Image (cartoon, rainbow, N blue to C red; front, side, top):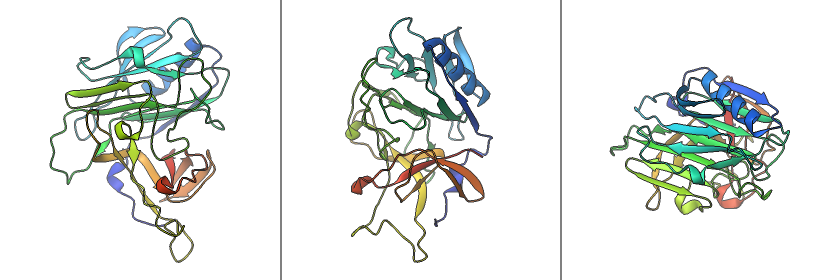
Length: 279
């Protein structure tokens, strides 16, 4: 693989990587909360298996909160997004995350987390949240930017909606905040969801270098709650490899160790594999 990585998207902080195998909603909530606290998040309110956590403050002065809770019934634990002042939120449209005795992996920093079930792209097995690294060259006042997404289609449906587990864009349940605007939806296509920048080339060249290596770029993101999205910045501690890769594979690049998140993405217009930094 080749290319210059956008080094400012490294948090510069240790990344928390944890696995847990919850059999109950409460166990999923407890383990998820513990992982985020270990990554530098703080407890804001609540107790036990219903808590609101606050992210760290990014170098662009962005921060947000998530509620993680056991609803007391059903199959899934829930995760909801809110702005820091808690004036923009809709927990009724929170993400559904299935314990099910599955082994979950969490990769988290103080600004972002991604949690999923390795080996599965079924519904209710992926959730992520981020306050992205803003592009410093862009002249636009952003005081709040936060995204939460999952691949679920409700508490009981095993069907997986589109997410970074199988594409370079999301098309499922979403919560997002940008300045004073917000969107919360149970199912939202890419026109109002998160999209990564990708350019697969033409004639199936897959952005291949002359030595056979594949192109690598920062994970550039766009989302907007009220209009067609424009590019905002970048996922933290992530890269996009212009190649079809199996998921959950260890990748060594730039002197660091990564894991492939995206599973065998062969969609031509969005070809690419998201890889997350683990050490």
